[in-house]
Every structure is written in C-alpha cells, then in structure tokens.
Amino acid sequence: MTGPLLTSVLISAAAMTAIVAVRYLVTSGGFAWATKHVRPGLYATLDTQIRKEIFWSLASAAVYGIPAGIIAWGWQNRGWTLIYSDFSDYPLWYLPLSLFAFLFAHDTWFYWTHRWMHRPKLFRIAHAVHHASRPPTAWAAMSFHPIEALTGAIVIPALVFVIPIHVAMLGLVLAIMTLMGVTNHMGWEMFPRTLVHSRLGGWLITASHHQRHHEAYTCNYGLYFRFWDRICGTDKGISDAFAR
Image 1 (cartoon, helix red, strand yellow):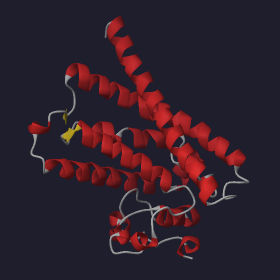
Image 2 (cartoon, rainbow, N blue to C red):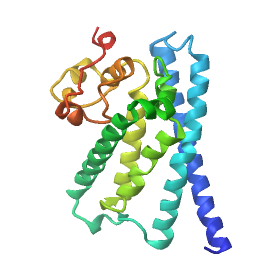
Image 3 (cartoon, helix red, strand yellow):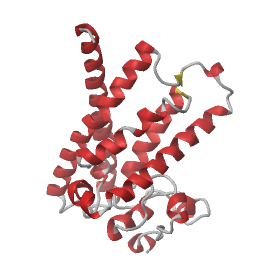
Image 4 (spheres, rainbow, N blue to C red):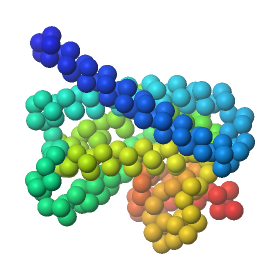
C-alpha cells in the first residue's frame, strides 16, 4: 500500500473513531442528563464508576472505529461490501427485511459471544470490566475491555460483506444499536409498562430485562430480542426492582 493510500485509510479510521466517540458522548450524555431530571439522585454516588465507564468506552470507540473506518474507505474507494445507495437497486420491501436481518444476525452473534464472555477465565480477563458497573448507568453502554470490544466491533463490518443493505438502513441499524445499548443500561425503564408487559414486549429487550443480567449474571444475554434467551432457557424475566 502506497504512502498516500495508507494515509487515506488511516484518516478514514481516525475519522470513524472520532465519530463513534462523539456519538457515545452525545447519546450517553443525553440519557445521563435525562436520568438526572427523571430519576434525580440515581447516579449521585457513582462518580468514580462513571469516570471508569467513560474511560473504557472511549477506548472501545477506537476498537469499533478503526475497522469501521477501513470498511467505509473500501466501500467508497474500492467498491467493497454490499452496501448500496440507490433505492432502485433492490425492491422497497427489501429495506425492512435487510434491517431485520442485520438486527437478528447481530443479536445472534451478541448472545453467543456474550455467553462465551461469561466463561470464568474470559470473564476475569475481559467481561469483568463491563460488570464492574454496579449498577449500570447510561455511560456503561460501551464500557468494555478491548478484547470484548473487538468481538462487538467486527460483526457489522462483516455483515456488510454478506447481506446487501441500503446505506440509510445501515444508519438505522447503527442508531438502534446505540439507542438500545444506552437505554438498556441506564438503570430505569424509559418505555411504558404497556409495552414492556405486552406480548410484543415479551420478545424485546429493554432496561427492565437487561437489568436482571447485571443482577444475576447467568441469564438474559440478548441485545435486541429475547429469542435466544427463550430458546436456550436463559430468560429469567425482568428485574424485580423494575417489576415494582
């Protein structure tokens, strides 16, 4: 790879790292601000923990941003990936199908790698960083050891080589991933009880469900859906505190 070409790739990786970091700070910061007003005092004694969550999350931004930046460069300059920008390339009905395919594939990868991270040795080496958030806060969404961050960073870049997706739908995937990553950790439920306790809510993961994972560790491993938890017998319902 020539000097100018390498420089171009490095700039793309650095730019994507900055985008991921800013996205984290804005989204987590926004929901932390909302928590301060909706649940005053919830994070009052967690300043030291929050500083650690921000440190690990900004480190994770580089782990996520570098491969994403390289793939973005390859898509724009070399035609890598199956990302498309012309709506006429595929039927319109394919747009929501590709969105669901990405979310389900990501959820499947996350469920099984998450369970893997709970093996004793890997937990001590890597996943313990995330579970040091007791209780989790809005700042904990990306608080991962680099080893764990890497398992999450490769999945979306890999999927764009396998599943065709419009760039707008890819942006929506990333928005949903960010939103659910933050809201599932913020320590209170933003979605209405009518949704959480509905038939649909029984298949979706929200803070009520993920909070139990941070309480009991050996259950509720999913990211978006409760499908794999239900199939594998690891769904233990919502947190008792949230149920009240």
